[in-house]
View 1 (cartoon, rainbow, N blue to C red):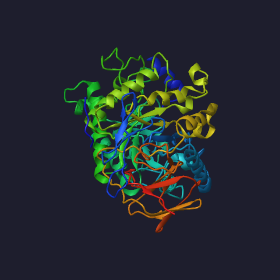
View 2 (view 1 turned 60 degrees about the horizontal axis):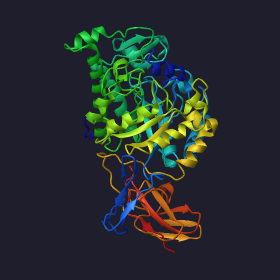
View 3 (view 1 turned 45 degrees about the horizontal axis):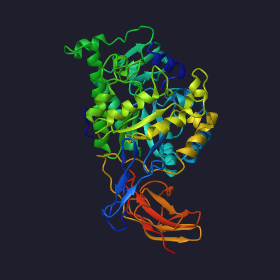
View 4 (view 1 turned 90 degrees about the vertical axis):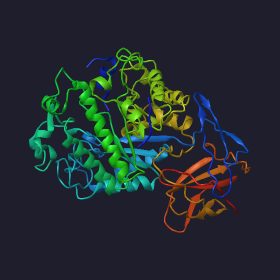
Length: 526
């Protein structure tokens, strides 16, 4: 637990936004960049003999991710019933594009609606694999999904939807062993879909068990929840949880009780994840508006839907309680949009995490780029300008793009712009306090021969960072930012590791554990 303190469709978002419906010696830690609120900062080396200025244009640590949605086959697989080979090829293509864009994480939806993209004794196979809920696809996708991500140096976050039991309201289409059919008292029907009732302790226990099962059996790096908690309000319909409220409400107001139900689940999942595997990250990507200032003087200067009031998602509570490792608000609006201005919301969220151990990443609306319903999204420079704004706030430690389909299509060439201007070098993952880990021993026997760099494997290393100093003059600031970082290489088997270099200059190699704790650098010799 961290210490804290005080995906919607485009059309739906439009409605919601309006408010309608270094030192180089053994054992010495590598220098890490810090920054002031609005400018690059300085970092002293471990020896304290030098002060290094980190260039904000080349952040050394930054999360760069993409969501891969499986519900309704949004991103992967492209349709149901594909052969295993075709499913695998489509996924690999997404990963290869992520690597091409210098991303370092994927958020893959493994449980879109109380179903599984993995072999499970708790929930049935997902219909989005074969077209039939509960039908065995003949392989275990999650094993492959994780392994291929790791093979490319990508962190893998397993994305769960906690409360959606079925996207279709017809219970007869669900397998007989589906939890919603086994426990009909758990469900609430709302606007043609079936939800688990967040007010029931049994539901919280089931969701927690599902998450824990995946963390225990698969080599995932993170657990991720999106913005769906209580359903988004629609048409004035009421969520039928009166019986549960009567039994468990204990004199609370309905809205407070609902928020408390969600908070209890988040805390329970957080505890289960870290008790099972302490290094696994847990975070949430909530709707971008916590509360409007008109409802709460500490809210944002916006006029859109409030996640706190409408879907009972209290991200501020999760941050202050330390029940998430990171928060990733979906800021799917452009700069200057009156109801929900990016330039208002991003700083608001930066202020929320200030002084806490909870990291802040921003959910970016790649899928909106090129759409004509909002003029700003027709401009190729809109989304890149979000990253420019982010650099002014040290609390913003990365961005995640929705979604993988647009990563492939590159609307308006926007990803080319982002890579050129913001991702010109690789980046290590941000370090999250409290998750442990330890930098592996620094690499030894590092040799540069022609265009081949090689070194002896470091025990416990999951990857290696390669720095190239073109001038050949290495000083204590050579690794303070990413200006010299040319690659992050996943560890291969065997006693020695190799990297095909471009030649020229001097090279440094560091070893990284699975959390990207970094060893002291070692200079390559002849």
